[in-house]
Length: 304
Image (cartoon, rainbow, N blue to C red; front, side, top):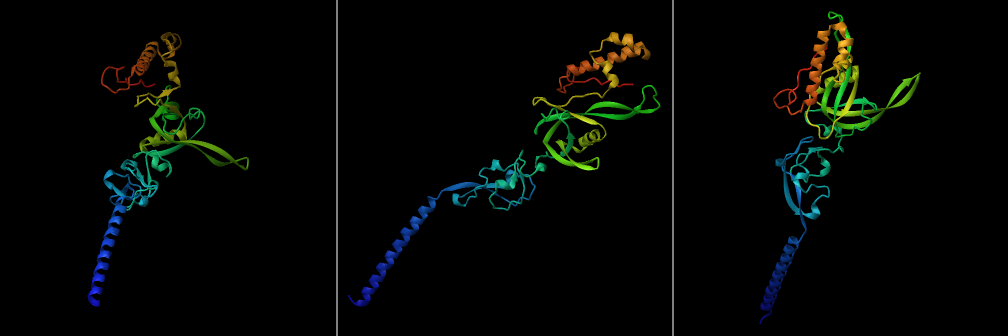
């Protein structure tokens, strides 16, 4: 065989060997890829603006090599759906848990705890107003206010006078936070640090009005509700004279000591108020129609 033919044969053999080697290399590389550990991660389907509640349609799950998954990336849709974004989520980007705030978390500030449609309002409290410091975030309270109200006098109907009245201003209010602040006050020409303890509640704008007014112009107390207590009940305003018409005061008292207002009128007023308190004791709070004592409250008698 001539020398040129030998060179051609050698070249063909080397080409065949290179082809076989390339084939095995690619085959092994393909097998290696199929054996790489993979994981599922949540990514943004579209761009999601900051401070937006995340819906399921905004997300999708994709599979990728585990080495490329961020340690703080969400793995399940449930970890993100319903949360509020702190930053913009870019389409196709892994959703990091640090960029969203789930319900009940405070890491991004109090504003993320405020329910939609509500506002956070803070009032300064002391130990008595805050139920001996037993009020905690997540509790629900009723707020009772005592204020002086300009009203016609009882003895002089044509003349306005101030009467002290206690009312249940708000019911079933959620407590968002309990805290304390240091304020500087000037006493006898010197500045002094004073610790002011506060309670922050979630109320609507309309509910905020009586709360702020009672706090500014009168006094408020918080009544801690049982976790099992649901709904609201009617409650008439209460003033000093109403102490004489409590259910514990017998009718005989009015016969003996209240003759100055007219015996029959006084007894009739006593009976009306006694019937009102009885309706409160029998009220079930269901709101179902029926006789007083079965979900319907009688109208409270008004002091005259």
